[in-house]
Length: 258
Ligand SMILES: C[S@@+](CC[C@H](N)C(=O)[O-])C[C@H]1O[C@@H](n2cnc3c(N)ncnc32)[C@H](O)[C@@H]1O
Image 1: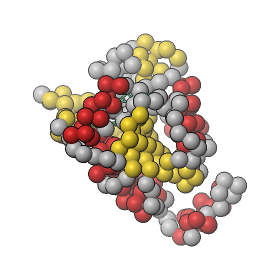
Image 2: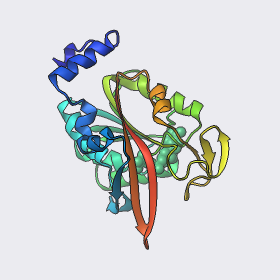
Image 3: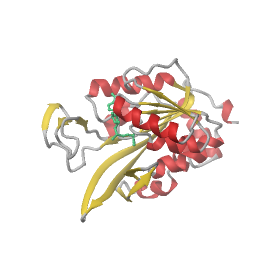
Image 4: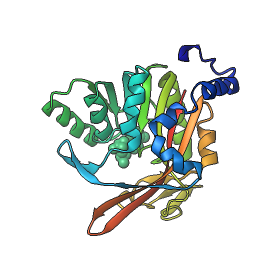
């Protein structure tokens, strides 16, 4: 039945059909726990831990990433782009679950670390690239899913727009985007030097030289207006660093379908 979904031209009708058959959207299945709190429009608080992943201390995987596996498998997804992969936390997780992973980062240093990890562990289903999200070196409609966590807000608005247009272009129809963006409600909003409206350099500890763009739900919906289904969740992540010091981020988690 899913393949009979009317596309684009009858968006509203299609959404109603999905509601009648199944009151939960796919995004809700991925984030079912979080949905409850968001219904009350409150920030849902998550405590994250620093754990050793592939020999490296990293923040634990988000529930969104962990739960996405079930939906991706149900939908027979295979090709996943980890855009701004860093040292590969999410890529390695998707590879362990058998997906064909395409991992790209603008930082050569980060992808070298990932390359070493996959050689050490004989992982053959991660392909590594060195391109920016503004210029994704793949053809149209190539990926089943694009995962882009803690990345896109490291830019000015025009580049973020370009990145979203590129993600939309390379996603297959019905493909899924998992994205997060910093909220204007985050405590660091307004700190550092403003380089344009809602974008600051030096606002966040440990990332002083990098721009951070902050958004709100209306602006985010506008950025994602070409997507067929957009689910936005208000999540506050609290990471216990050490010695009682906590690092907090208020972000919008997005699960969108083309
Ligand atoms: C905080 S790390 C997140 C890494 C990974 N996505 C994760 O969740 O573990 C941000 C990453 O975004 C990358 N990045 C920043 N700007 C980028 C761009 N324009 N294109 C691709 N990657 C970029 C950085 O090099 C860095 O590795």
